[in-house]
Image 1 (cartoon, rainbow, N blue to C red):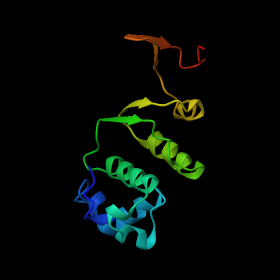
Image 2 (image 1 turned 135 degrees about the vertical axis):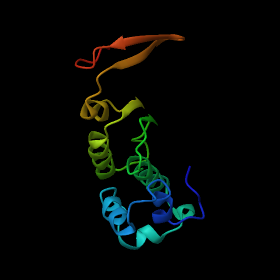
Image 3 (image 1 turned 90 degrees about the vertical axis):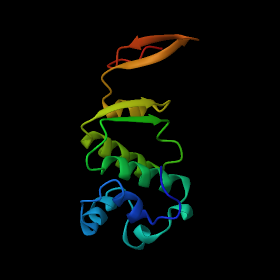
Image 4 (image 1 turned 45 degrees about the vertical axis):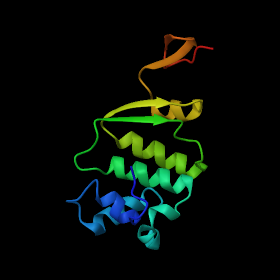
Length: 133
């Protein structure tokens, strides 16, 4: 989804072309992408940095996506990045489909409906208020 040749700012701006660059810089700071980091080429980013930039592009898109599908989004993230992810997803007003083994992360998101694989080929609905073993 991200062009390795683009700078971070260019990659995010591709999803929000009408948002002024200065405003995008302010918004990127909430994803812990600050200062000269916005001028780095996407190809030079670590896995965690790349994830934060991809998430920023999705969440700052204009118009925003209606559904985000996240597969183990907390992998490769430090504690501060997970906090920012929870904060950003809390402000997101679209639908979320999240696959994660990180129980604390799921609890913090306030997931409404939870499904788990009970046995091969069969999904089971789990009460999101109390995790069924």
